[in-house]
Length: 289
Ligand code: G3H
Ligand code: 13P
Ligand code: ZN
Picture 1 (tube, rainbow, N blue to C red):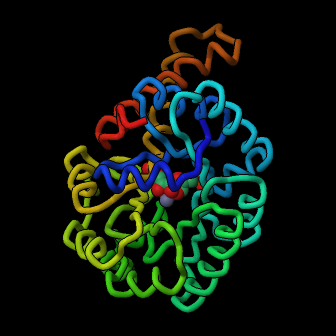
Picture 2 (tube, protein in one colour):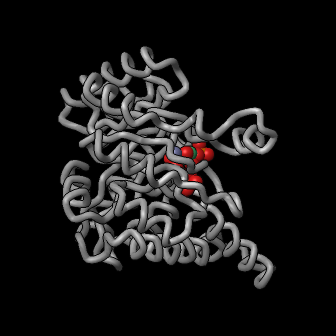
Picture 3 (cartoon, rainbow, N blue to C red):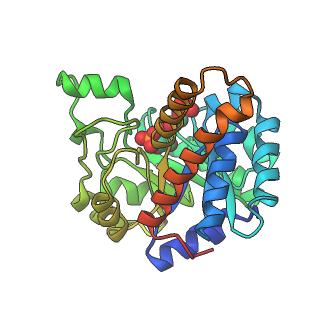
């Protein structure tokens, strides 16, 4: 059942477990995430990036998430969130269409601009009684990984400064904060560098729930440590994409005459469900619905 995100995240913070925020862009991924949450009796966040919205359109994707959430997912709390809204237009559109939470990601801008945009969007979100996430520090993707490897940039320079984080939250009045503590978007073998002391320091200075992005590829121990050190929401996308692709390759190679899209996609949907269930158990949100 779709519920206000405050209900889900406040309970996770108090209970010292994390809620998974899983990216979706279509019906199959949405069903996989929600079926997993139901099976594990877990709260869950389903989120769409700007490019996922561009893939279909906002109203269509919102309807899929709402309908699957309120039917298949009626027994568990589910919230709908905009992930990495880099443009104020899309943030406003998601607020207006009925999302439970939006991410104003102005982390690439200078500090003053990040504060200004996050504060502006926080006011709009709060007028509609929904939550807003902002981001401080940079969470890189594939291109950033290359720059890191060549030494063009240094991870330490990109990470969230704990004292600045306190100032940022006080000024913007956002509800959750995406922090940069060493994770990268995507799946990079051997890259596991969560700066746990920094995370702990941010937790000491900032009282709102913290969000860890770039969760794919981290080990269960790293997740558990990060949760212990104060993370309440963890974003996962790539792990589901990998599960989808692996199952799809195997389905098509095993049954070369298969043409029914449902039969082609079903094993992939099931594989993503397995991945989400596994993740929910690591995060400790199972049986918390
Ligand atoms: O953090 C980014 C998410 O994994 C979404 O990626 O823009 O390819 O949908 P996307
Ligand atoms: P991964 O793709 O690394 O899991 O990151 C997901 C994410 O942070 C979405 O915002
Ligand atoms: Zn992210």
